[in-house]
Image 1 (cartoon, rainbow, N blue to C red):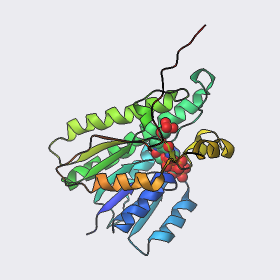
Image 2 (tube, helix red, strand yellow; image 1 turned 180 degrees about the vertical axis):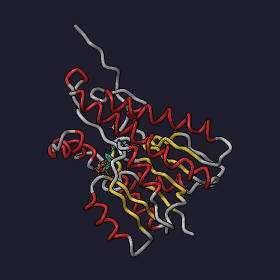
Image 3 (cartoon, rainbow, N blue to C red; image 1 turned 30 degrees about the horizontal axis):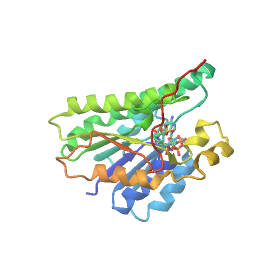
Image 4 (cartoon, rainbow, N blue to C red; image 1 turned 120 degrees about the horizontal axis):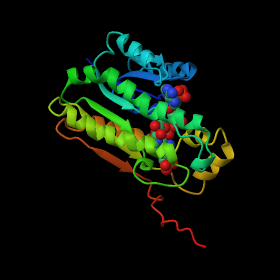
Length: 252
Ligand code: NDP
Ligand code: 8X3
């Protein structure tokens, strides 16, 4: 039986690139995301290579997540790697100017959604045991503060600590957990974050060398295929052309 990867947020960016990367290595794919037409197009691209199962799924809906996992068809039930990748940032303005609903959407997606999928797949992953892997996509924003990150960064700090805490409880099961924390990477992320501002998105990525979705997909695949006795607790990856900056000081 081939290995099977369950990917959330497979319709774009890291998740889509991961679908290609795992397919190239012969893994069966469970591809999820809200945009069904994108899932169908991806299935069309990859089903000649490997078995592909798609599910239009909003990770915020715990009943839908449970139902999707319970309804996995034969050949896709032995999920060996979970890529908890679906997520988003919104409202890059200062906290005091942000609509509360944007905060809720980030918490519902990045925290509750990730927890929903993890909870639904944990029994399977534990049953698979040695070599089973959860890759939780965190962010440098979960470790380092910056203006306009407010709830986004806090949600990714949750991802980090949840990953570490999971490791404690999963000790002895063989299941690995990694907080994969990328820096700036060119995907649709900034378009979503800015509410569809293509100019702002282009400005952020032009004139530098951001990570690509394929770079992160490669890290995901690397983590998932490490020898089973190795667990990367956290892997923080920045492009060479990104670093920290000085502390901000409020002068008179
Ligand atoms: P994209 O916007 O390109 O992709 C985001 C994916 O998340 C889409 O497939 C989208 O699918 C899915 N998604 C969003 N909300 C939901 C939801 N409620 N239910 C199911 N799927 C959802 O961004 P990236 O690929 O860059 O982002 C992937 C992850 O990486 C996110 O968790 C992000 O926070 C994180 N990250 C991104 C960085 C970057 O600079 N790009 C850096 C660090 C971390 P759909 O809309 O079809 O549902
Ligand atoms: C997104 C990466 O650099 O915008 O998680 O915080 S960054």
